[in-house]
Image 1 (cartoon, helix red, strand yellow):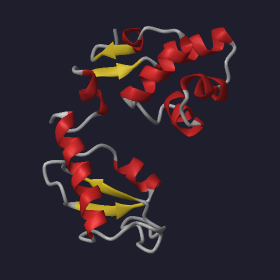
Image 2: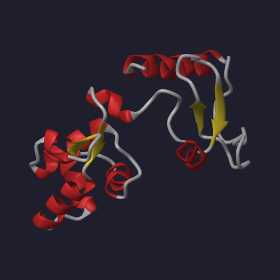
Image 3: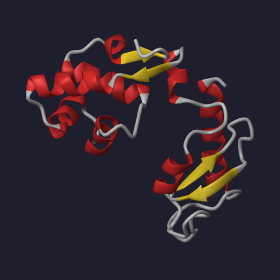
Length: 146
């Protein structure tokens, strides 16, 4: 699956929400998994653009990626983050997560999600690498862990 299909599906949901086809997730709609207020629409397959379910953020994270999707697709090959390299560099510089977030001009929660192993968003990682003075290629491992 291409990253562009994901973007098209997300755009279709935003457009459908604005047009009133899908209800706005303002807290009145319950999460289909746990019953808390839904804040996001979850795609299980990005090829079906409007086949979504309202879920809370924690349930969306528990559900994992949609079929055929991985954030690694944006990097162009099957990679995974070398979290140890990022943590080592941050510790070597004596930076807190808050300081990294400030230098990267990103919200704290987004940077914390990377350092706690809950996110591999390529754009966020690129900005973190820039803030830490690392080459982006240095923090990605191939499928063999090398």
